[in-house]
Image (cartoon, rainbow, N blue to C red; front, side, top):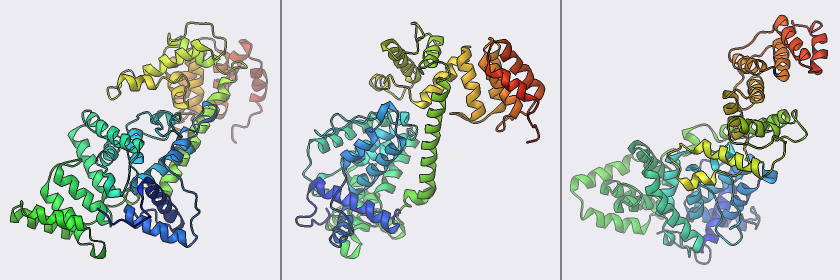
Length: 481
């Protein structure tokens, strides 16, 4: 157990202060790769706060939840989702059990809800529906395991109901998640637990020793347990007295060969590389995340702009696509009424119906009645495949412009020609436009004046007025530009 600092590390408030201080310290000093145990981080946070570097306002788990749940007008704010995820990671590393548990929920695509009186009504979208979080059972199991084995005494905490409930939920989720994972995935999760808990702190090393000795959260292994107890006992002034006692006891029930093996492993041990050094740099990850946000926003705006071409309301395309799939049987009037919402929910259920990793409750939770941009892309794709001309037109434009899918000339022309075969004037007009300028990406389409003239002429014949001017301008278009 780490040493207690009288009047400073008192319950979850101390941990929240610790988490925020560490986050700010790392940000201001370029120490994103440095990991602190709660006690060491608290010392750093207190000394710097006294020096006037930190402001007195501190964030907590609920602040991250508010960021995750903030989605005005039903549109997911992906920047806020990433902000929440970053905060929860920092709090989890600092020892906040709710953040540890919610990271398990996030990476296993569970609903994220509040517990306290201030946050009980907060609820964010399903993680994978945000467009920036991917399901990762290995990472989920690692965080659930850390939350499930959380020892409040080690953190000098007097837990409230929400914190106790967070640990209990994690304890329930661990066997549930393991039941749908392979042995290899479970072993990877155990390795990740070691990576997340291992640091230069005797506190985390001692916790790993306990987990290996008791078989709680890690496979029972006395050699591994003694290895980590030895490491936690050899940290000079920071040596953990509990680790010293635990190591002494363990040696009384181990063979000489086992003790020597543990001693050798402790001498050769190196702290696992932090996530920041195992993959792309933090800057690269941040750029990738921001790119995902921008791409998703562009997809949402582009689809909304396309939908607006059909009527004053933008539900005509959605209703038509749902009708083509047999999910909407009422008039297509562009109004978002109860029947349209019910049809959207049925479509959302169809998306997850065959997912064996989700319970029926989880599948029902995905039926929000509000389509995310990725779900709209999927709706258009499925409706196009059952010969819905409007959706085929949209799908062709998406391939030409790279909206939700990679730019692909041949795919674009294929879907537009399918739509045009039904006498759909917008599809002919789009074909004329793209044959005039070409589509460059995968399987590019080179410009062709004859093809452009043919399709623009077809659009004119079908009564699409804008095609008349485009056809007139076609022969003045500079194909060399």
